[in-house]
Length: 248
Ligand code: PEP
Image (cartoon, rainbow, N blue to C red; front, top):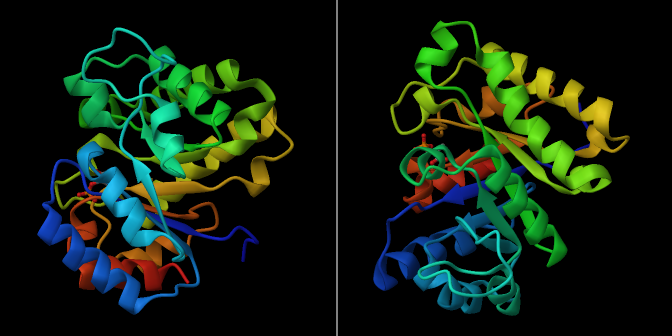
C-alpha cells in the first residue's frame, strides 16, 4: 500500500446549472467526509458560488483551465490571480479536450501549470495518447513528451503538481483502460518523475477515462494509481460518492 492519500477530482466539463449544482454538491456534502481528498472542478461562471457552498467543508474546488498570462488583453480567459482570490485549490490544465479543440500545446500547458503554482493553486496536468497513437505503439513516447515539457518548465517545483493520465480513447467513451494498462503507464510516468525529482514517490498520479462506481476500486488499487479525474460519473451525486468511497 502506498502512503499517498488518494485524490478524486470531478471534472464537470460544460455541464451544470445553479439548481443542479446545488443538488449535486448537497449530495456530496451529505455523504462525506471521505477517506480520500475530494474536489470538484467546475465551469468558470459557477466558481464563486461553488466556493461559497463548499467553504468550511472537506470538499475542495477547482477550475478546468486558466490563462498562461498574469493579466491583460486576453478576452474570455481567466487568470490564476482571479481564481486564487476566491480560494481556488486546483486547476485542470492540458485536458485532451482543450488540447484538441483549443490547440493547446505542451508548452502552453506547462506555462499554465507554472503560473498556477505561483499562486498556490495545484495544477492537475493531463497527459494521454489517442487511440491512433496507442495502436501505433506510441503511448510511452507521447505521454513522456507531454510530461517532459512540464518537468523542464517547472524544474524542482514539479513535485508540487498532480498528474492525470487520461487516455483520450477512454474519455467519455465508456472504454476504460484496464487496470493493468493504466498501471503500466502510471509506472512509466512515476519513473520519469523520479528521474526529475526526489519527491516523485509522494506525487499523486490520477487515472481518468470512464471511471465508474463499478471499476473505480480496481483501478485505484493499482500501486501507482492515486485516485481519479472523473467526468461523466462526477455529475450524479450517487455515482461520484461511490467513486470517492472506492478511493478510501
Ligand atoms: C474527463 O473528462 O477528464 C474524463 C475522464 O471523463 P469521463 O470520466 O467521462 O471519461
